[in-house]
Length: 243
Image 1: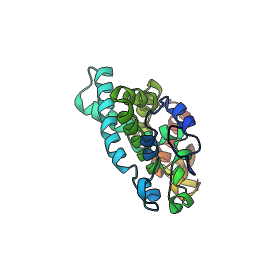
Image 2: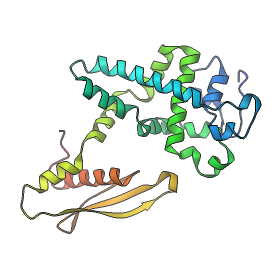
Image 3: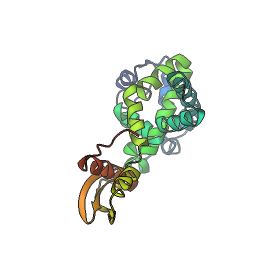
C-alpha cells in the first residue's frame, strides 16, 4: 500500500481512495490527514503529527474553491449573498454530511478516550478530518485534484439545493401564516430525544391553539423546530413554498 501502515480505524486505505475518487502518490499525507490529535498525543516519533495543520490548510483551499464556484455559478448575486451561501456550503454540518457519505469515520486514528466516547461519529472531528483530507489531496495532486474532490463532496447541485433548503426560515413563515387570523397561538413542544450525547436527535411538535399541526426531528432543538414548522406549513396547505 505504498508505505501506508494500516492501523485500527484505518480499515482499508484503497477503499477510502475509491470513495474519494483520488489515488495518493504519497500515502503518508492521507495517513496524517486521518490522525486525530488524541491519537497523536498518545504516540511518538513519526506518528506524533496530528491532522491539525492539514485542517488549517484545507479550510483555506475549501474556501477558495467554493468562492470560485459560486462566483461563476451566480454571476448576478451580490457579495453578501455569495458569502452566506459559501458559509452554508462549508459549515460543519455540510462537512459532516460529506464525511458520512464516504464513511470517513471508519478510517480515523483516534486516542483511546475519543474512541470510547464515540469520536468516529462526532461532527466536529469528522468535519475537521474532511478539511485535512482536502489539504492532503491538494499537497499530493495540486489545486485541480483538490477542486475535483471538493466538487464531488460539496458543490454538486443536489448539495446546493440542500443548503438552500436549510436557509429557509420555516418558523417565521408559519408565524406569518398563523397571524393572518386573530387569536391564534403557536408553541413548540419537545417530544423526545434519542441517540448518544455526541449525536443527539431531537423530535419536536408544533401546536396551533393546543393541537399538534406538525412534527420534525433534527440534530439540535432549533433544527427540529424548523422541521416541525415546515411540516406544519405543508399540512396547513402553504406547502413550504420557496421564498
